Length: 390
Image (cartoon, rainbow, N blue to C red; front, side):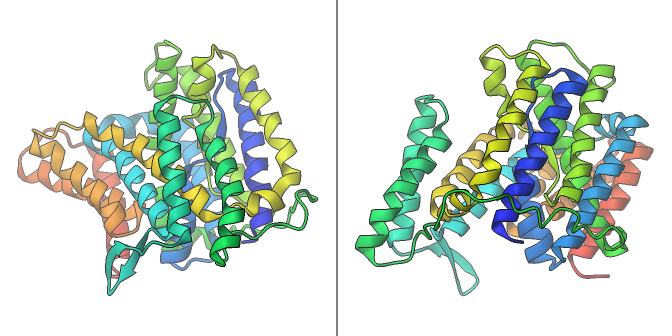
């Protein structure tokens, strides 16, 4: 997928989703392609499963349609109430660990050696990555505003002399910093292939990520605004419907599914309480349509520290798991560890739910219901597909 076109699609999805969220729900929630969604789209569905990206865009669209129906028919509520807290709490932590893992791999700091992961030798690429990571963590701890943007700017500038003195290719400086937006990804979606049986695990994973990641983020943001809510609130339903609509449009525009981002909490902390914040944020994305050459030239070693920081932040959710209760701890552990070891978010989700179901059956737990059984069947199909049994 062309990098400049990806920038354009990401910006359009973020602007559309945020504006829709502000107009439809009047909540200060910013919408953008989720990091977990991005990782699953590019690293798992395309790189590991070897699916054409046009097909994955089709899966993105259909997952948005399905998620919309889940919200409208109140099935989302039944799913959220039928699964244990340990699965919900471990999902974010597992994605966080996987995102951090991708950050270390992409930067070249960790490399593969005869099938095992080892530290890479010191070179200009690893030096740039470590310098940016240390600076980012320090700025974040000191609560400096916009630490990721600051580190990207400093890292970008530092990479220029580093390349000059090291004589290694680190940065590809653009011939111009602005250009017309590249709309070539819009409409490249394959609707038919996106509905094939082999694509069902991908659709299912996108739905699960939208369901759990979105629910967790939105619930925490409501808490930040000190607004009471539960899974049956009409206002919450409108918020999820706006989120699902944006995710559906994402496939048409050429992007991975969008979701409400946790960075919305920054605006809430500054007093944002209305949809005007989301609308304004959406409009502020649009000027970057013309800066795609500059954005695309940022070295991966400068961007990767942000993935590690996001991973650290998401891993905090693991503290909510009751590790003293093995009935809760075991599914949570398998959910977290299998995402990274199998390089697949969908495999982690499927494994965790299957382990929970088996424990519940053989230990006579009274947590099972029809909804949980149906979800387990889907997870079994996903797991069997992951181990190439069909």
